[in-house]
Length: 202
Image 1: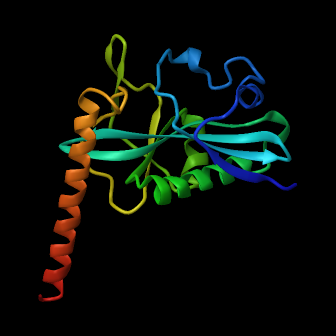
Image 2 (image 1 turned 60 degrees about the horizontal axis):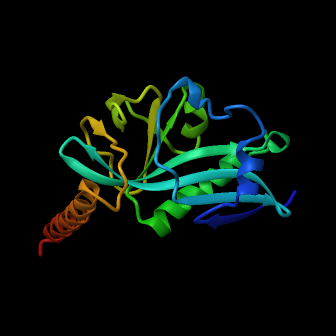
């Protein structure tokens, strides 16, 4: 079975119907009553012209202790029923991880999942966080009721409590957060370069 994977900024209404509407509440969102930012990028696997597997990605700044980091959030991971148990979701996730690292330039991957899926993501290099994660909701900040997992691309995940937030990146305080992240990333790069030079005795 030949599966072609493609990356899209949007997917069509018909593709959404095939991928997400084959059953009632396939992501069990009614159990948690949480609101999330829509994904910015869609990694889709096609059998011919038919979409059969999907991973969504959103770039998002988070606060971890005193540090700000830019993460690639993973969501809407799904394979249509007739193509499940064939490893397609794992391959789609692998391609999404590669895209996050090479094209988005994020520092970490981040996702929420129920406990039963921790092992699945763990086999792809994800690690479960022990710290609670706060998310912004219409009624205020709440602790995420799902397991939180991170994927480290280069640097070790910082220590400290995690505040995910949820506002749009192009307005309000998140724009300032993005600027802070870029400054902090540049500072850490300079510090690492300085340490390397000292190690060489220069």
